[in-house]
Image (cartoon, rainbow, N blue to C red; front, side, top):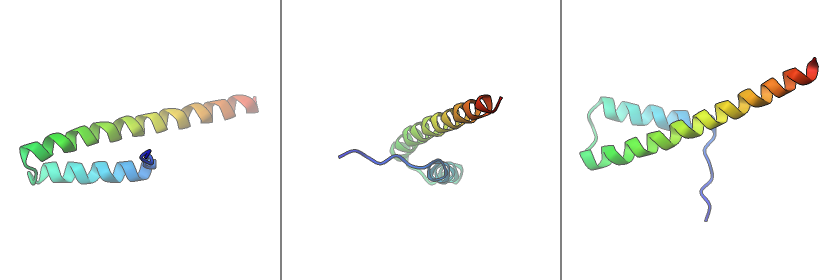
Length: 65
């Protein structure tokens, strides 16, 4: 079964929660490792979505010229 990809806003919200958990020192070392891996995945997802949106906007603006 394919996991559905989060929206940009969902990914950012998950990142905020992970950062808050880390800042509160609420995480066991094993859990911390899992959260950091998840944060890395979410950051990559956000970067991809931002890059794609930027490219689409540039393309639309070029079509207007």
